[in-house]
Amino acid sequence: MAERSPSSSRARGRILAVCLQFRICMSTDPRSLGELFADLTRETRTLIQQEVHLAKTELAQNASRMTGSVTLIVAGGLIAYGGLLAIVAAVVLGLIAIGLVAWAAALLGGLVIAGIGYALLRAGIGAFRPQDLTPRQTLETLKEDARWLKTQTR
Image 1 (spheres, helix red, strand yellow):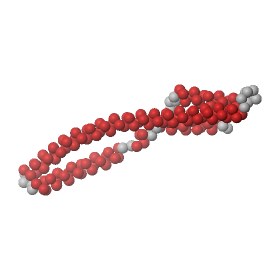
Image 2 (spheres, rainbow, N blue to C red):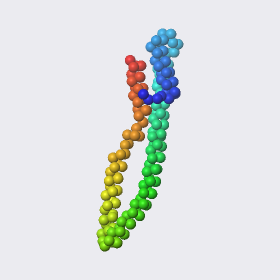
Image 3 (tube, rainbow, N blue to C red):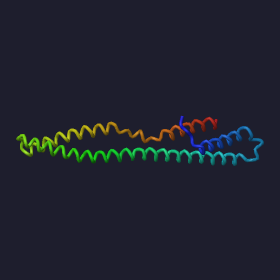
Image 4 (spheres, one colour):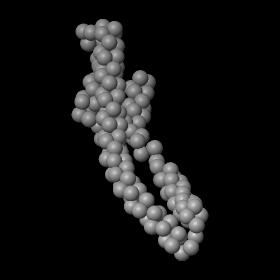
């Protein structure tokens, strides 16, 4: 089950208290029905604001976690690219040295590297999961809040 922030729990407790006062103490409560509904509305708004804040926080954490990973991937890719260029140059020079014409050696080296690049690109696209950015905790608490409010309004 998703962990709740203390302020979210307090807001839920206040809403519950208002609902209980409305149900049980309606005849003894000095507040009018309008005041009770105003309290319920105010507490519900507070709960929703806290849930939105939780969603923003969770999305920011997910994004910062992804930013660090993406930075490492880009840095590693750039360094590997420099090494790959040196290897391609060596392969092309080796093909020329064994008697292949320069343009054919460069074409062959380019085709091999392009094929490897395509395979890596497909693997990266297949491994990328945008659902990792979904604020699961917030969605779960919103569903739980909706179920709770339904039981309170019956």
